[in-house]
Length: 217
Image 1 (cartoon, one colour):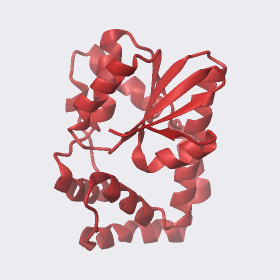
Image 2 (cartoon, rainbow, N blue to C red; image 1 turned 30 degrees about the vertical axis):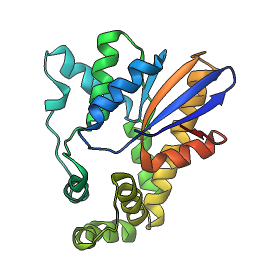
Image 3 (cartoon, rainbow, N blue to C red; image 1 turned 180 degrees about the vertical axis):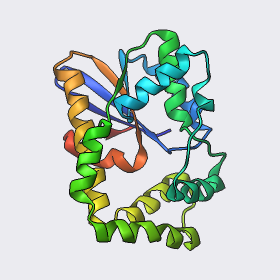
């Protein structure tokens, strides 16, 4: 799993570049967090999603077995990504980090937009015509042959297709801005010396650019 690092004030952020859905990332994430020994882990999920995972855990259930309803896009994405390994929902990188942090008492923070803010951005950015085009675009993606030799290449190619529609590009850019601000807040205002953030690869470049650039490891 590729990593990016950036120094913010007196602290540091290490970003783990996740390929959303790949099961093999489960072990990679646990290994990285154990080696990096952060004082906080940030997950690219909403606060509501983090609370839902805690509710599942308190009931004694496994968050990996939480029922997920996939959209048409997610179904096509999962099928094409499966060329590179087993794919499961919810993403194993997120669930593995969640379970490890709760077991080891490492603080966790949801660094993505909350549901209301996401819905507001969506309503402002995505026009009716774009929504209609987006609804049918998944059929094109279902038939499209992606010339990717690695999962990293595939997810970036997939993202370029999805964000060709300006509204959906604006939506992802809003997520990137928010995650960058959250990471800055965790280090500058809350005083965390080392934050590890698990963010899907296709959003890492945008987050890093808003943090002033990241160093590749």
